Image 1 (spheres, rainbow, N blue to C red):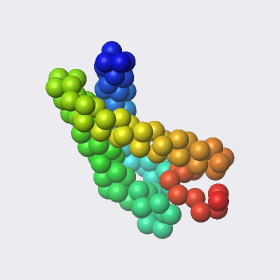
Image 2: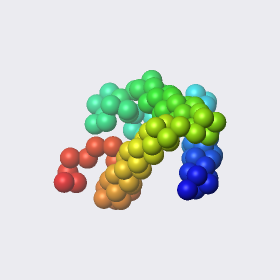
Image 3: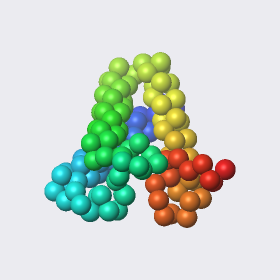
Image 4: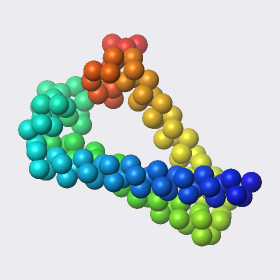
Length: 125
């Protein structure tokens, strides 16, 4: 069982590093070409989702996601080093919450016809 937990934590670390790098690349490309983001994500003051009301809101949300990833990486490394059961259980709970969040996101994206951000769509239900 310990070996499976260790492999799961290492895979989680690698996946978190990949996602963090993709988000950082998104922020860097946003600073270079803002007009494309304004058109693609339809960033405007009257946007239905708070994340798209301004470029600073979009960057703030991206930085918040990076902060969550860094926190996950720190706790994962501590779990590998110290091997505390409470920390490993806490990581598992956090991973389940993120998994439910991603499944919800993908379902709403599918249900909306893949045409806009699925963060909140009151017409689906």
